[in-house]
Image (cartoon, rainbow, N blue to C red; front, side, top):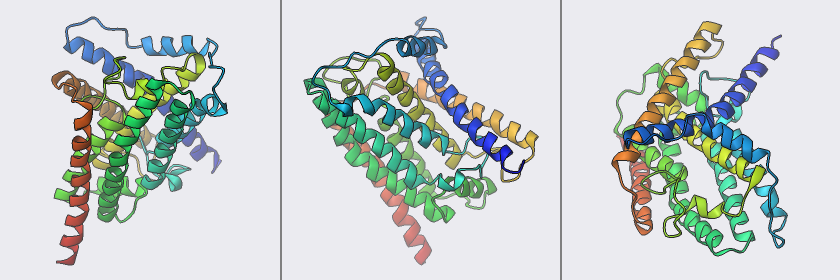
Length: 318
């Protein structure tokens, strides 16, 4: 019995991420439509779309290698594992020892690598265009993310998310300018990594603006369903990451009672709701920037993360 309960909680965490990801993406889509005075699709339409795609056969080009076929499964698996390692309703779950920020960055980088490789493997112009743009954005987004990791780890004394959430929940860190810089930098990186405004438009198919969509144009059927589900999981992951690090309100600690876990779950759902509403309002109020201005946007995140880390070093030496 001592192992069954933590195992069930960990499986519940994984199932929760998988179930909430399409709902979160669909909810943002509906909120944006309402703010733009459009009817928009139903909230559950994305579940129907995924079910329809899973039931269809995948059409694969004759010159595609095994990389093109295996990439959707690898992208989905790595993204799902990354999202499941982020504490949502409670800390110190069974696999929380592996929930390290550096591990999550590495897993997301692996998913990005396979997606770019699959886009190049098929040999189309759109695939190469999307892969090159993704590589350009990643060259700034990943260092910025690492700077954010260093900033948070220096404050909390660890890069493990359970330790960080427990430390932040205790409120002993006080008001720190470095954490504010890290929060702004993480929001910028999240917008770029999830393909949201102002970096990318998830609903466009224009060749001049496509990034993520250009890399998945050749996919269909269950392969496309896995990639779309992985994309929704990535959005859930970054919203959960922001909530875990900077707003661990009511998160259940180690050895928490069932009512504390339920309270943490309700608080987590409330945080995701607030995050999706803010994202929809932000995307409605802002226009998409030009592709060649995105490096400046991500460069600001890199500078904020670097300044936050340097500020901690300077303050510690005084």
